[in-house]
Image (tube, rainbow, N blue to C red; front, side, top):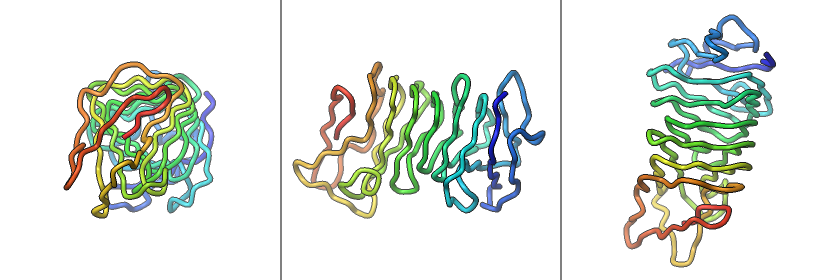
Length: 212
């Protein structure tokens, strides 16, 4: 095990209920998977109060509970040593930060806190039950629209959900590279909300990105 660092655990009301030093007995070890208790609604890998700058190393991270648990990167670095961090259905990953390792998404990945970027230093696999929610409120990456940066392979399935914020209306000719990757396989089953008032997003897979 190479579990080190600090995790901040919040309940459904948003109150901090645990500051978890890793390793710690409050994290239950089952078949080399860390499973968070049902009293924990959200885990932040960044600093307390989303100040960022924290690094957490975990041998394996999984949200397997059906209780809509969330991990918010909060500017932190979540180092997954072996083999893959996984989000089960109804679990989610939000905030801006870095996952140092592979991520498998059967739940929801939504970069930023409107908007932001998640960087995956490894492969990203989205299953047919997974959803990637990307928000757009301007033309500048990370500031105006969400970015998912994958340094390795992107394997895509499931849903891509586009959400325009603050009544933002794209103009003709604007482009948005929402996803970047080293290489790609697969495709989304659905891309939601391509239509907006007065227009429609075209989209295309490029050599190393998905562009609207």
